[in-house]
Image 1: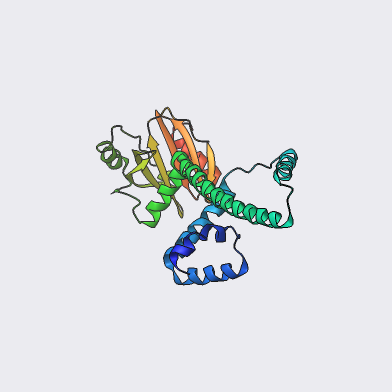
Image 2: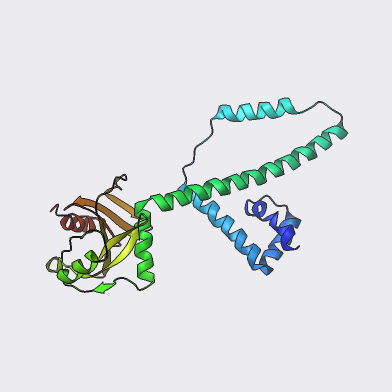
Length: 254
């Protein structure tokens, strides 16, 4: 089996719709071809994300009855030979329909997941927090002095974010950086609480819908607060109660 032959079967194989002999052949090909194996893995990952993240609705029983009735009424009364021919045409049509359904699921699923990733501020904030951590780029200006961090950020943004240090309460200011959130540059304050790092995204209020006060995304807590003329979005693996209290203090609510 070459890549051209495999490309038409990868989607069906990922959906478990390939018979034993062809399944063995394509498995052998995937072990040898990195490109086709990557395409197959992408489909498998997408299916897992769709099942995990998209809402599912159970079709009513009446729909099943209507579908079966339509199939029965469309079945012609013919000889056994004609019936066998119709059966093969039905199977071929079903295979094509299955491929079409896979394509539709791919397009719609990818579109919805991309929309969620781009539009969900909490997900974007967590992604930015993780990227900064893994890339070892937590701060652009490293200082515990709020009078150093604030002017550095203000000089690079079209607004001046409030910067406060809560070292006496255990939340020590580490520094700050410029990051991007919702496609715009945003001031990011970095704090340390014991062994936990906290990213706080500070920006002027927007006309967009506000995120939930508290969410958990991929094991990270995301807390939103409003105050002092700013929106505050704190992200950390710190427990929700302590992170919520800290965000409230930052926003001047406590």
